[in-house]
Image 1 (cartoon, protein in one colour):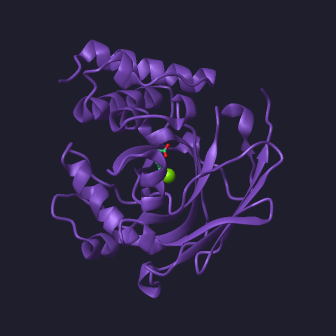
Image 2 (cartoon, helix red, strand yellow):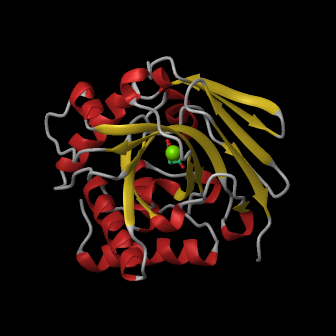
Length: 266
Ligand code: OOG
Ligand code: MG
């Protein structure tokens, strides 16, 4: 089963409307049972095309559901790729404005900035890491357009993997100086540790996740461009946040990110 062009447009517009109007809704796999993985990526592509037409710039890619912690929580055991734009960036130290989102959650991620273009198929973790310029602390803010973050794989692919905002630390570290397997992140909410993990949680190694992204994008004619940012996926389960909260994620060698949660204009 698949969806025709008109249905693809309709689903993309519905998900964009939910984002703009800050409301969640039911699964599109229920209203459009023909939404398979292929058509879901076509919806994601259409949704991003509309964001770009509205003035946003694509600045990178992200992986979703690359750790067991995330896969178990979301009930989906298959990773996916999605697209990052400049409108999603929160500069390090600036607050998240919660009223701009529906039901935000945050998750620590290891981020790469690419020196070289990476194009599959056949990319390995070693060739992927050789194309990386620098490694950074990352914190992603996800905000599903589905009620209670309840979705099947085609839903979350269509929804650009719940992408909303992200922070990447400005200080990059040379990948050759790090053992990313052992690079740890500790996540604290209002001063209390809520979770921790190492890079090994992400596809066995964040470079495996990077290779997976390059190979997966290649199957749809895509590539990871030089200079782009890659978020390799939540290392731990995501944590819900509300105005007044403060999130701290601290890594072994990548530094830390503080994210105050503000209200913002509603
Ligand atoms: C889907 C997005 C997954 C990650 O890092 O695993 C993701 C979700 O959990 O809503 O960004
Ligand atoms: Mg994520």
